[in-house]
Each structure stands twice: as C-alpha cells, then as structure tokens.
Length: 146
Length: 179
Image (cartoon, rainbow over all chains, first blue to last red; front, side, top):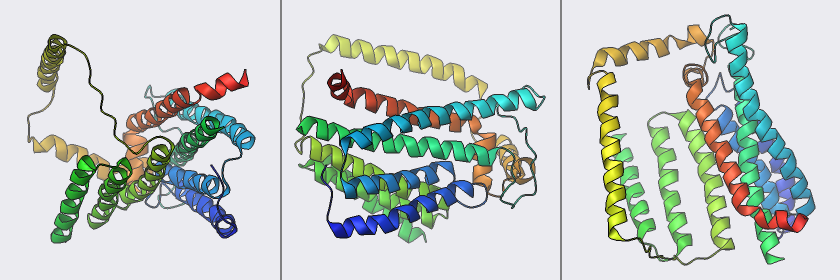
C-alpha cells in the first residue's frame, strides 16, 4: 500500500495522537461515562489504521509491530482470565469474577473495584485485535503484488 | 421521535435490499454502510450512547476493512454450484431440525413461562441497584463487566478467535517467504 500526499501525512501527524488520547480517555472513564473497553479499544485501533493508510505500509516495520501486537493481544485475554481467577481465590467466596478490591465511592475515577482494570485489559485486547486484522490485510497485499 | 425512527428503519431496509441486488460488490458494501450508520442514528434517538459510540467506530473500521478486501481481490460476485446430491441436503436438514427441536423442547422446560413479569422485574431491580453493589457510576459498564462478565469474556474470545483465523488464512505466503 502506497502512502498519500504530504498534506494528509501532516494532518495525520497532528490528529493521530489526539484520537489515541481520546481512546485512552474513553477506556479510563469507562465506569463513569458512556463507552468502555470495547469502544475505546476500537478508537485507539482506528488511530493506528489512520497512520497506516496515510503513510503506506513499510513491510519490515509492520511485521515487527504485528509480532508485538500479537503478544499484547494474547497477554490481555490471559490477564482477563487472571482477574477472574483472582476473584475466585482472593475474595473468599467460590465465585468466578467475584469482587476482590475495595469499591470506593461511586463517581470517583478510582472506584468500582476491578471494573476499571477489566476495562483497560479489554481495551488493549480490542485495540491489538483490530490493528492486527488491518495490518495483516496491508501486509498480505504487498506480499501478493511483490 | 417515532416518525424519525420509522424513517431511519425504512432507509436501512432499503439499503440492505439494494446491497443484496447490487451488481458491483463495492456498491453493495457501501450501501450496507447505510444500515450501520442508520443504526447509529437509531441508537441516538433511543438514547443509548454506549451502543452508538461502539457502533459508529466499528462501522467505520469494518467499512475500511471491507473496501480494502474488495480493492485487493475483485469487484465481481462469483457464484459456485455445489455438487452435493439432494439426499445429503435433505439428510442434513432433517438431522439438524430433529436435533434442534429435541434440544429446544428440553431447554424450554427449564425456563419460566413466556411473559412471566415477576422474573424480569426481579432481574431489573437487581441491575438498578447495581451502583451500590459494583460501585460503577455507569450502570451499563457495571452490568457488562460485573453481572455479565462471562458474556464479556466470550466476546473477547470471539475477537481473539477472529484474529487467529485471519492470521492463519492470510499469513501462509508470508511464513513461506521467511523460511
């Protein structure tokens, strides 16, 4: 995939960090405002997709990043299971996904027990997954045309 | 309010019918986008911002991926004739129908009667008191990540399986090159 013109590249440089930051905000405030892990993860992935479309696919760099993202995705889904198992062990009750942290007051940023941690883990998983799918398509096209 | 919703629904139905009958696959995908973005507006009209945020981002990313696939492959629709005989078709249909009805009959016996409002009211009351039980100010996240955490685990696993499938199908050529 070829890159686009200098105007698109410059606007991408300005906008991609803002989009990524907005995704992080949606993930971090998932237990307070509309949104959460799934929506925020897709917003973060769309900033990566934006960059790939604007700059074109540089194959060795993309392959390297794809390996890192595979590691991140597998680790995130493992983390989700670890949180569930920690609830089983630490809470004293024999329930999967049982609450084991302090709930705090509803409305604060640090509250709601393990729900923010689950949001972050699911956000990482969704972001890595969607980015990998798009990167695989971009790499696949370059490998076929070469 | 309801008139806008009806207009959106009619537009969505027209878009999906057009995408079925379109000659070019690219125009089929784009007219299918009408359904997705109409769904976003419908969610906003029904005051469901959580779903609207997810739907608008997923719709944009899906459209980009679908257009990338079509630009990489072909615009033409390919039709294949399967060479199975009619007996196998009927046997498969009968097998699945019988299995489905037997399991369905078993499962519905365990559930409460259709339209039993008491059970539904009890669940709804438990969810609305969720702020005190989970501590999350956003009730939807409280339900998705605490009461229904198994469902969320399943959704995350579905995405993981999709990624593994895409990599398995697409990266065969790349892995041969590396050897």
